Image 1 (cartoon, rainbow, N blue to C red):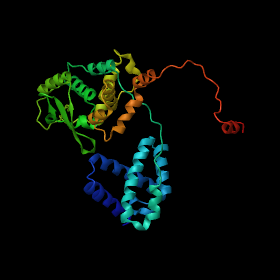
Image 2 (cartoon, one colour):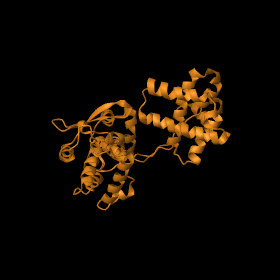
Image 3 (cartoon, rainbow, N blue to C red):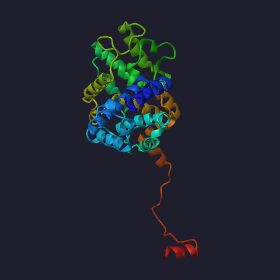
Image 4 (cartoon, helix red, strand yellow):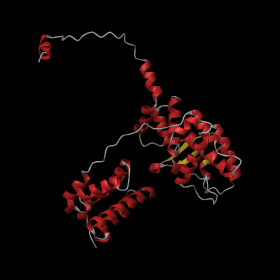
Length: 329
């Protein structure tokens, strides 16, 4: 057996599962990265993955793999950087467990993430949000489910994984109505509900008739909705809503767009960014700064505070003879 196999096994079982207690999503993402990497190396070196050694994963090979992801697999730069982060994590683990490869490890860890343009976030205005939540046909069971799901999404800003992971016990509709969710980073948080959302959820729970551990928004078979299913239903209802709200036709509406819409609605209401970060479950308030960049009204208010100039500009004159001499050079 090569030296790579036990290192990979220790990385997943010891570091990720036992020490870090990484989530299943993280483990799956790292697993997929190394499946792609080992398959790429096997094709390049004409050797089965079980016979690859750590020395085969040098910086040249890793760089070629990253280039392959973007040019041949069509991955975005952010996906490429996520794969690189998984590789870096593994090589930091090998620093202690394979010190004889210190030079190779240092070269791989020196591969930088690729810079990329960050687009301004897209969100829905109040009329667009209303049109979207009114789009489902509430004469059907799926329409009533989708209506409740969209209302919860736009008023709580939950991530897709948090929405699909909600169970009936996570809903509290008494005084101080709120949802409890287990979010990213293994953090539990409570998100308050508006009176209208509470009313819709109360009617949905009466129709649901499920066990406490059943998903809040199930499929017809009673299983939790998948991420792709939520993506499809949001896109379907956005297309329907565009008939009554034409501005929706020019926007790509995804479940994450609804999360951005929640943040922008809170920001326009004057809520502090630190509170928005708590609401959305951000790790730090710095993540919430993207909404300040996207909000033109804040920039317009800042511009309005600047006194207007009269348009007359005087010619600069040096305040000192030495500076005047330097200007002649």
